[in-house]
Each structure stands twice: as C-alpha cells, then as structure tokens.
Length: 324
Image 1 (tube, rainbow, N blue to C red):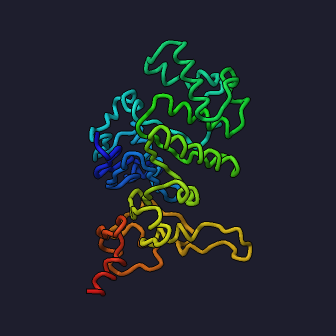
Image 2: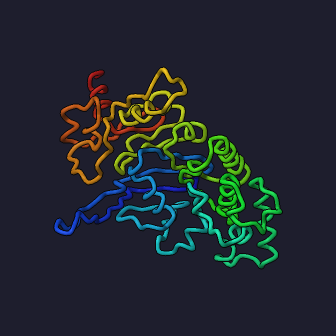
Image 3: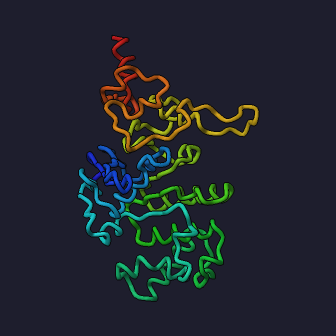
C-alpha cells in the first residue's frame, strides 16, 4: 500500500459554454493542469474564491465528471470514471448542505444504509446493526433510526450525512464545504467530530473550503486555487504565517475581524471576480495583482520550490535573481 492515498497528474477539465444565440460556443477551462498528492491520513485543504474550480475538481475525484486529460489515481491505480460504483467504494463525499443532500422521504436508517444496499453488502439485520454503529459513532441516539430528515436539526442532518459517507469505510472522504450551511456554534461540533473520526478510522480528507479559519483549524497542507490552477501549496503553518503568492496574501487579508474599528479589509484584489473566459497569455492572476511586473503579462510563471512546498510567481523568481 502506497503512502500516497490520492494523486492527480496534469488534470484538465474543459467545457463548451454558450455565448448566446448568435455567438456560438466558447471554451471554458475549469481545471488547468492540476498535479497534487494527498498523503494517507492527512487533511489536504483546497481553498479559493467561488468559481475557482474547486467543486469541478471534487466532481472529478468522485467519478461524476471525467477529466478532459490527465490522470487521477487512488493508491497508485487510475480511477475509472466510467465505473461510479467502484469509485464510490473508495471515495465518498460529504456535501455542504444537509438540507438538500438527504432525501426527505427516506428514514434515517434507509439513508445511512443506502450505500450498503447499492453495493449489496450484508442482509437487513446486519445493515441495521451497522447503521446503529454509525449513529453512535457520529453522536446520534438510536431512537432516530425511524425518524426523517425533516424532524432533525441542521447539525443532526449533517451527522447523518457523515454517517452515510463513512458506513462503507472509504479510504478518502471529499469534504465539500461541510459546515458552511450550519450555525457557527454547530460548525465547531461538526469539525471536531470530523477530526475524531479521522483519528479513529484512519481516514484521509480532501477538504474544500473558502473559510480560512476552518482550514487553519483542520488542515495539514493547503493548496490555493485560482482560475483552475494551483498557485501555491504549503504546509498549514507556513502558508498562514508567510504566504508567498499575492493571491494567497489577498485571501488571508480578506478575513473579517471582530474589531468594528478596523472596518472591511482591503484585499488589494479589486472589486471584480476573476473572468474564466478571458484569454491569459501570461500569469492568470496578473490582471488583479497589485505587484504585477511587465513579464507577468507575457510569460506564465514557473514553479518556485519553497522549504515547505511551492508556489508560482514571477516576484519570487525576480527576488531570487536579485540575490545572486
């Protein structure tokens, strides 16, 4: 068994997007040349603005979308996107909205047991025992077996979603904003539960979020995504203490503080979002970068290796040349 639980090699995902009745279709690159490795037992976090490609990447990891090119491997073996059943045995999702991810017409027992039924594991009695075990593991009483989602709070529903994801004992869990729809007080409970389950079951998490406070609490390593590309990948401590890419710095500066005298933070990234349809000849971030150089408009930056990871920025390369 390899130490690398999940690996992406030069993964691309392109879509054709309609521009209107008379303009035809245009190409949109949602994920661009992403390569990364998730080590067994770690929490690997992916952060970025809405529209950066995070959810598209998650769908490819779950076998819901095939990559346009590149490879996705689990335990060193390529994922067969055409066989969702095989992928689901090894990778399971926890979605952000427990109100829409659970079928309101099914009981809690039916919801948690559904993966076992689909994969034809055990009989009715053994499945019920497994569901009881999972309910206890996520901190829910057995009396909720015959309840329905509409009778549960948001936090309880997300615990049910977690139990359903883990009942098959997957190797990797894709957590796509798993607490964003919950009250702040409940978020902390769910995050602590996820950490306990990771420890007890030896899970590997691929954690997608825009909440940097959550990422700082959970992650071992963090990748920052911009317009479908990874622009920086660092250890959690290194990235939050000393971000090296201007986009990462902007994200960290965007976090609101409880001090009303500080006002709304200025990220120096402008007031508009990135345009994924715009043609980029150089660095994809150069149009919003407060420190862009002339070379940024014409040449894409190369990877700069750091002591705890890597980043892609011409500024760092210019600094290195100046020191020579």
